[in-house]
Image (cartoon, rainbow, N blue to C red; front, side, top):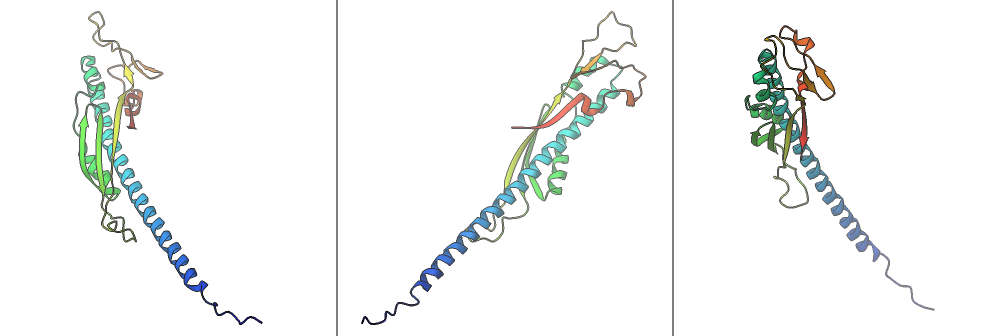
Length: 195
């Protein structure tokens, strides 16, 4: 008859080690998730900031086109974005609404490039050095003119304006047309994010 073995309880330390390892992995995945959420928030803020600045510029250019309706010589500069203000301040506003700060905002002709940093940190985690990290992201929004028109000729009457073709829509503006009969900002320009 063999004597009884006394190895009961030897699996318990192995069990504790495996559970501790699994808990560490779970917390590490949680830290990666926190960082991904923070990074996603930064990208959302950058996209919103760049689009807001571009849309404000688009609206200003559309207003300028309406003001210059009776002077087609000014249309090309307006539709090409060669005039207008820098609306990086609008980017600041939208970044702040998304709990981020603008690090840089650059305006080029018909484009804005914005870089933001989140105001919140990733938060406490088991990954060393992550607790105080903030995420950054950048976005570029482009304003694309949708309209073309023939240059005004010398043989046209003073009150005749050129036809304006915006995509598939053809507009025949008149100097006394009310704004409701004229192209809207999104008829004149498309605003979108670009790589």
